[in-house]
Image 1 (cartoon, helix red, strand yellow):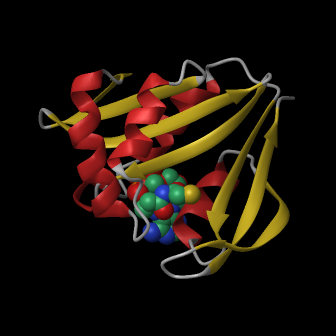
Image 2: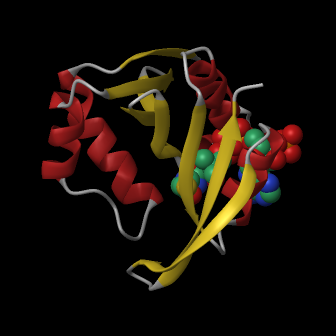
Length: 141
Ligand SMILES: CC(C)(COP(=O)(O)OP(=O)(O)OC[C@H]1O[C@@H](n2cnc3c(N)ncnc32)[C@H](O)[C@@H]1OP(=O)(O)O)[C@@H](O)C(=O)NCCC(=O)NCCS
């Protein structure tokens, strides 16, 4: 297992991962936009010579928005999301903000493990299916 910065050649693998992991997966256009946005950082986790997970953050004036994090179902519960999280925690930030579906217990537990706290709710933020988002924040100590 190793983690590296994503390259344009990873776009198809990330698109496939998104479809595997989310009911409201990002479109190819959104993924392409993330690659061309200079405020975005994307790291991929490789295992068995393929992309098994990725994380994307966006710098919003010193704060960081955790835009996406997922691990392919076959590679879950091995600590890989934790490794991706630790990779972004090495980067400079004042606070990291994210939204998560309120029913997404695995992700909420993961974020709480790394010190994120529930902060607010955004009603019907998600579609397919409609669901509220919980906003979580990690402030630099
Ligand atoms: C959430 C997700 C990224 C976790 O990936 P993972 O590689 O399986 O997670 P890890 O093995 O690194 O687990 C780290 C911690 O997360 C929590 N966790 C992960 N999966 C969990 C589950 N199924 N149930 C409860 N807690 C879970 C635990 O706190 C775990 O720590 P522990 O092993 O010490 O108990 C993965 O399930 C996923 O890709 N889900 C679909 C996409 C998604 O929901 N992304 C987040 C969007 S906001």
